[in-house]
Image (tube, rainbow, N blue to C red; front, top):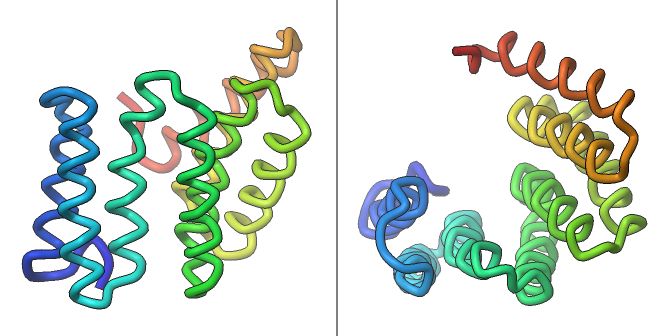
Length: 168
């Protein structure tokens, strides 16, 4: 199952990630590729893969600044992830919602999301989520004008990223 799954569903989800990360095509094309991936993994009965594909498809909303729509789609994906017990996707979606809610100006929602993501990352050992949450904390501090905490949070993030092997 999941994005590493074999068959057409897994291939479609990988295609969607490649289109997204490679910056190919128009944002609407990304939605179509993500939609094909979601449809293929849904037919295969892969709920986690469907969530992943639909998330990739929603990235065009973010890129176009359609934050309310992006948040609505990701809230649906969050509920779907919770319903199937997919904790890894729950935590990852919470980090994404942190950024979107913060940009939209709903700081209490952003704080709730990041606090839950941080707790899940610590409890479940989700290193990528922990790194994403550290990056969001640093960015949030900067955007809110707390430059002292922003600097220390960015230093913590960079140290953790290097420790995880992401240094350059």
